[in-house]
Length: 383
Ligand SMILES: *Cc1c(COP(=O)(O)O)cnc(C)c1O
Image 1: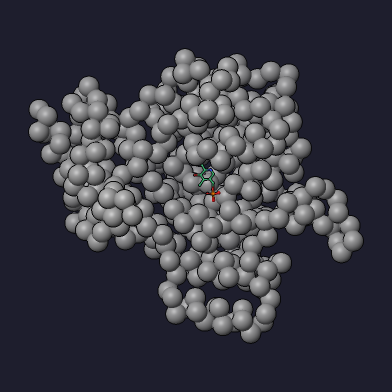
Image 2: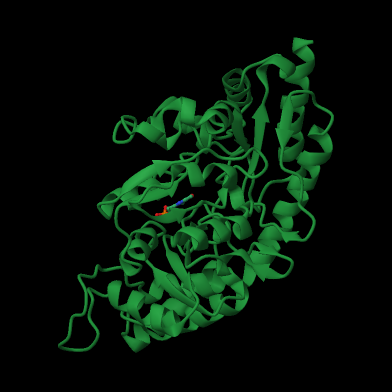
């Protein structure tokens, strides 16, 4: 192990995230059931139970489970037969843009808005060409993007909308799940997300017909024992993960409640610190507190983002520069015309200012205090 990794793993360090794990004894009992049944994958008992439980919890009509959060993006584009150009944002995890590329489509980057870190609706229309077929917005950090305006633009130009909602588990606006917006939304149940199934993901859709098609696609395109209706892929979820996911679903509300308390403490303490910006709760939104990004204005704070980031590390506090660098700066994409920083001024600045603070269900009061003091005192030292 290298030195940094060793320090990060030490007990005293404050980690950026920690996976939500079900009680081990309960999980072992589920494993016994699976061993007894000898049905370990292909739409088993736990699989069907988890799909139903998630649809209810998330308040969505239809859901299809996947083995991770990237295959839903790939499969959603396939299912909707997306070709040509797809409009997206560079301020996200690389999987968003990769999924467009893997479908043989051209990603077109549009800048984000400061208020949500999501796509700026005012800048979408300028990026539409005769080749454009879809928009792929991201509810970054679980902050809902301007779904109504995006839909108006999509309808006007006959475009599909596929939401990368990997961060938006359980997020609601006025009691309605954000996952019901657009044509489909995708989720990730990776270990670092609010809710995990070890690895996992899902597509949310509006109708039984689309679910059927997507269920075929994740099972090699099989529509029956002897019929293949499309060039599908394998993304079937096994019973072990579904049993684990059912147990985790029981404790996810408590985990989110703990995260909310952490977020409240961060907000309260950092509100008065010049040069530090962050998201406050939006009225009417049920947030999931999946991340707590702060944005460091070097001029006003008196220290750059990287200086603060490494100062935190020296004190055993591991934040994350998420999302930095922008996807548009990576070698497969940087030659695209839309990848030019001039086209992406807000995303470029925010990527240079961001640090995601430690945020998970196990942070103690003293952990949170340590993070707050590091940020507040680093500022004072510089005054
Ligand atoms: C995590 C994530 C994904 C990919 O999910 P995996 O489960 O890791 O494959 C896609 N998009 C965004 C925005 C993510 O954060």
